Image (cartoon, rainbow, N blue to C red; front, side, top):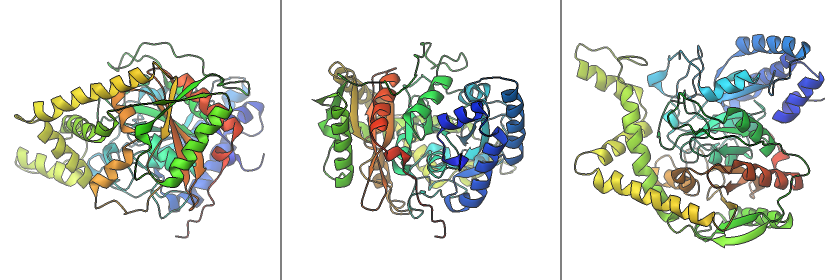
Amino acid sequence: MGDFTNLTLIEARDALRQGDFSSRQLTQAYLDRITAIDKGIKAYLTVLSDEVLQAADEADRRLQAGEELPLLGVPLAIKDLLTIEGVRTTCASRILENFDPAYTATAVQRLLDAGAIVLGKTNMDEFAMGSSTENSAYQTTHNPWDVERVPGGTSGGSAAAVAARLAPAALGTDTGGSVRQPASFCGVTGLKPTYGRISRYGLIAFGSSLDSVGPIGHTAEDVALLFSLMAGHDPRDATSMDKTVPDMQLTETNSIKGLRVGVPKEYFIKGIQPEVESAVRAAIAELEAQGAEIVEVSLPHTQYAVPVYYIIAPAEASANLARFDGVRYGLRVESDDYIDMFKQTRGQGFGPEVKRRIMLGTYALSAGYYDAYYGQAQKVRRLIQDDFIQAFEQVDVIATPVAPTTAFRIGEHSDDPLEMYLQDIFTLPGSLAGVPGLAFPVGFDENNLPIGMQLIGPHFGEAKLFEAAHVYQQATDWHQQQPQLNISK
């Protein structure tokens, strides 16, 4: 079989079923690679070496007994803001440095119930605030394609782990692009599902009306499998949608003949890296060659997505993060005065980007400013959603770039928050509208850095996104490219 870590999620699952190797062998191969490589990538915050081998041995016993769970014996990585009972969950923040959850996130539990085992928890921007995974309180994750560049964020650890073959697949979360942008930067495939499609129970909240759990893998087929196992109603999440999850079977016979692909003029703007535009337009041409019909569409309120998002998301964050007060769990800086304890705990526990967004959000929600900022932003958010609803009356999916550039250098935008926020300009509209988006690789720039394309679908339209990306990946090999890791830097 060669190197087990070169396999896709589906290939690993099938090989385990066929007895080509054991779950222990597969898991040990990933642990060995993490030991050898991750010191230069820094994708993981926690590696569960002993626990995962015990779980692999149990999976092998079940495999030998003839069980056929969808992911039995397959190791995965989990972003460190999805709780797992008994496993340290930090959100990459000092304020949760020693937090030991008493429950497991529904999305993770459904994968565990399907037989998956957890390799460890991946690095991220603190509390999922950032676009580069430079905001972690513990370490900066490096892009496997060039370790001097960022992997994207906030799910940079998960995307880097998959790209560097440190896990066959991983879970991330996406609030404003945090699965799609790192998937693009790292040359892997990642999904932001329809809001409410996958339970948020056990996801430590940033923006409650925006947060989504999303899978990251090498192929659309890998991501579709994980999505199908996690999606579905959860009574513990009030925003969870009680809607049937369709069959996501992808085969060589899938066709996109007659699929109407919309291309929004607002997404090909001045300032976009020319190689990004060229690669995305070439990918759209390939979809057309596979039988799709290309239609120009307009999403006129796209230009307002960045300011709208950076009012709504920080406002929700300021409310959500008020729970980190040093009283019930997490960091507590002792003081004789309660107010001082509260100030010192939050002052020492939160990093600068989290503090910035709490202040922005608190200001937007304050008396005299609520209607002018938060209230207005919600109205414009509705206009952005209406743009998508109207566009999907003409087309089945919409094709866009994921980010205006390929991965930038570590530290390049760290002193310019606005420049960093603009990295999400093409992913924010879909997040505000609550529609699904799938990012996948479609080329490389002159520095051999991956370029991603995003397919956006109507609410609950994930199946068509998977099918279109799968047909594209059957006709191309961008998703099969691997970084030549040089961790000496």
